[in-house]
Length: 419
Ligand SMILES: *[C@@H]1O[C@H](CO)[C@@H](O)[C@H](O)[C@H]1NC(C)=O
Ligand SMILES: *[C@@H]1O[C@H](CO)[C@@H](O)[C@H](O)[C@H]1NC(C)=O
Ligand SMILES: *[C@@H]1O[C@H](CO)[C@@H](O)[C@H](O)[C@H]1NC(C)=O
Ligand SMILES: *[C@@H]1O[C@H](CO)[C@@H](O)[C@H](O)[C@H]1NC(C)=O
Ligand SMILES: *[C@@H]1O[C@H](CO)[C@@H](O)[C@H](O)[C@H]1NC(C)=O
Ligand SMILES: *[C@@H]1O[C@H](CO)[C@@H](O)[C@H](O)[C@H]1NC(C)=O
Ligand SMILES: *[C@@H]1O[C@H](CO)[C@@H](O)[C@H](O)[C@H]1NC(C)=O
Image (cartoon, rainbow, N blue to C red; front, top):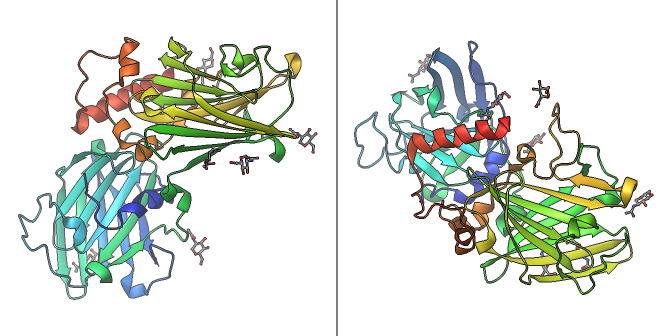
């Protein structure tokens, strides 16, 4: 849904620069926009003040005080106080609240008294929009004020991050200022490569820099496969007796790198193991440690070892992915017997009871925006491969919209966190 015509590609990056905020409890919090979106200091007369405060037990209040540039109002003004489609092209302030799963609410407040509120689940994935809020704005001379009452139930669960942008001017003269700016656009995000580094033990102890493992995920040129590249130290552990590489069920006992891609909220997941001797394994799981299949068919896998390092590059058909991959983890293992070491991208959480390595501990998994690389994955429908495993409903449930799906997401998250 093309809701963000303006600066669409920057929004995700902006979100990364949000800072933690404590939502208003009793005390009010004040924020001032003092920079442009790319971190240039702006004139004090261009600054925008945003106050957040508790309204009542069910809602909080946002008060915006902003310079008024007298941009034209929306041409078909609609009913002031009603949701206004297209408000993002006019003079407005946008307030974002985000949680660790990249679920966020975007609250657009216009100088002319219009509002537009969206709930999103991951980058640009709108799950609900046009939600009603109580909003009033007044203009006087060169200033405007807006006051919005936002029900707490609109916020994604455990929303902990905030950013605010102000917009005025039209088209090529559009001015965008930000509470938390970005200076350099991280081109990797735009290049559609996702990079991760295994840099700690499974318990969270930092690894030496020559022992870290790099993973890169991107689509292959045909855009029907995921290309997974691994670059890892080579310990020259004993090689598997099965020579010639290929699918190998016992690979986990040797030098190996594991990637897990977890569908959410279904908790179906795909495991990919890659080794330095050309072996690999693909396993399908449906819920914690519930193996529902593995693949003996060959994968396109190239690898090489050079000195104390090895690289592997596997081509994985997108149809192997469970629906809606939103979480991931990765691990590397090497060493023999008591020297065996288990390292993790996302190690056990602090205060966890986990007392041995458990790559399937789904509580440790973290957000990955794979559906941005592969938007079709953002669908509850299983691929044929998953359907053949008999773990998908016969007729795919239409993706739910609205608060119901948020409630379901939240309920599953609670289950997940309590597992
Ligand atoms: C905006 O609100 C502030 C504080 O309530 C007030 O001092 C100011 O006059 C208001 N300005 C406008 C344009 O309503
Ligand atoms: C913005 O600029 C300030 C000072 O000029 C600097 O300290 C800060 O790190 C910059 N922020 C970003 C996100 O680049
Ligand atoms: C990394 O460096 C340390 C000390 O500098 C060395 O003992 C270790 O063998 C190195 N590891 C690898 C995998 O090369
Ligand atoms: C992954 O490996 C393939 C094959 O070696 C290479 O063509 C591609 O550029 C690599 N991509 C990344 C991001 O490293
Ligand atoms: C191994 O992979 C790393 C990271 O992708 C890359 O920088 C390096 O050039 C690769 N080495 C070889 C020999 O392919
Ligand atoms: C750890 O185990 C104790 C005793 O079984 C339990 O009370 C506690 O809630 C557990 N903590 C976590 C984080 O699971
Ligand atoms: C929200 O955060 C609190 C405190 O960190 C935690 O106890 C709770 O489980 C979290 N709930 C969800 C659904 O993430």
